[in-house]
Length: 248
Image (cartoon, rainbow, N blue to C red; front, side, top):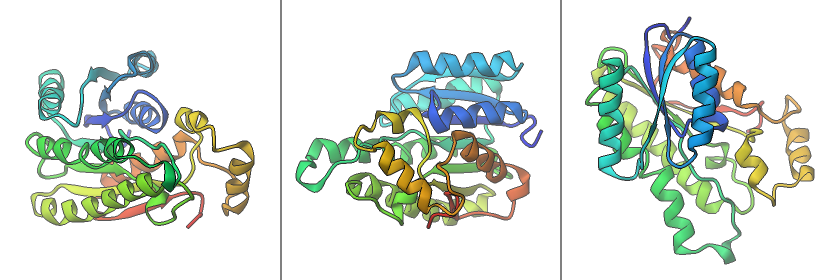
């Protein structure tokens, strides 16, 4: 029970990596806030799984690009669980697009969620988070340092997340709050399945050049998240860690 008695807010936790993290955190003893923007059915499904395992959790809908939504998210967390120890910033967009198809709307939609969606959430979270052993974990991407064709907007937004992680670690470290980022390689999520241009041939090719010879599972990222949010990582901050089966 590496997270026993901890309280964690996980943004974008309705499905995929965020859902896997929420389930694993609950299994490790944490009380979990499952944030979602639009996918209520999936959020309820994640909640049901946690409650079936006798875990503690609740779901909360909010637009994390708006200050009012963020404020309500953490106020609800305080009201329900009385404290905050861990924030996981998982909410994000990952729609790949070649240069000639990139529009202002495509750019702003990604940066509003992947970049702006991190800053106000952290800003509000530090008002509540345990100042002696608080933890903030950003979910980045291998694309920030190992870009794929067509991910210039997505990869750029995740490179910004790397910089935000490093800067926040410097600023919040003296308060006792650690800030790290997990940067996954290609992970088999529902979102990946919706990217029609990522064909099975492309997936097989990426698996073939990955040293561990497979794509990631959401549970692989969840296991790493437990490590970095537990006391086992108490001397680790400011790091962007690739969790990619060895692909660099």
